[in-house]
Length: 172
Length: 177
Image (cartoon, rainbow over all chains, first blue to last red; front, side, top):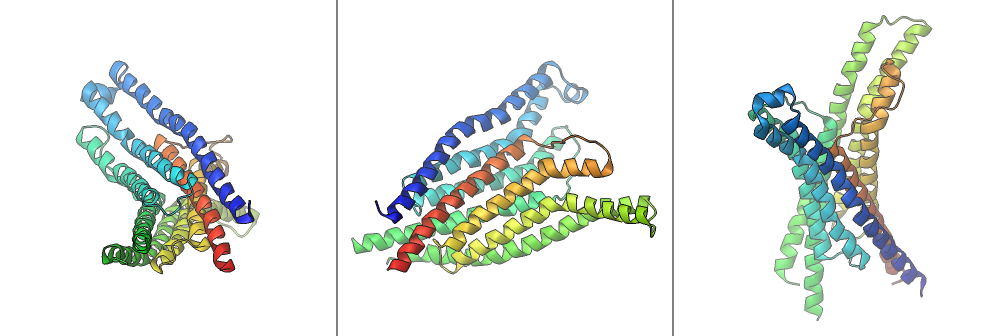
């Protein structure tokens, strides 16, 4: 095996290791999000606080579900990234599938921020939960820009992959 | 090469070039926003104590300065991550997709985001409480949403690392050719 092949093999092995780790981490991540949600749903249904009693159990449950939507969208972004690791593990670094998955993950992360910053506060206040208050958080704005950049990177890589495929097809 | 494949790539390159500029502007705005946000508690801390030209006054000044940094640091780190991403987008805008600089930029940006989240969740609240004497232990401000973000940033960092390894190999190949 040449030095180059060995390094390529190392990169693939690293992607494979990460994929195994991902397979272990995703259930833990989902559990870390879903278990507190179940706990909160139980509490607002069977041991409601004064605000939950005021709005009623179904609305309180809906408010809790909406509140967890950003976290679930962020988890979806992580799950989508798994496909990228699979492609990298196979040594397909510039494949259309990997690039599209990268872009989709960025969209999910972006959706998570839009939900957190705008949709959840408005929906919760409309449902009679906490009063609507919007505060600019530079860190959230920066993380949203980060997600948007991931979308852009995925988009450019996808276009580059399509061009590469077109070049290859022409040669063939 | 078919035009159908070239046109989206050119469009994507143009978008990436524009997005690189937007990322730099965003980083500057976020840094300014962080300065504005961090400055008010620091100024309040200064106003509540009389700043004198003795050791106590200097300590109060240092405390106010420390409060400002503790509150603003996560946003500064994220602004740095955005600058790294702007370099990646700039490379893509120039049509250099599989370079060491671009791949390393993805990794560095994601690592910057991880540091920013670590400061936001643990370091900043803990140091803040130490400075203001509100507490002595470790303070966590973690929501389920933050957990998802940490995992997302960590995965992007891993992907950047793998891309970096692959780009290194490509660079070596190009040098040999």
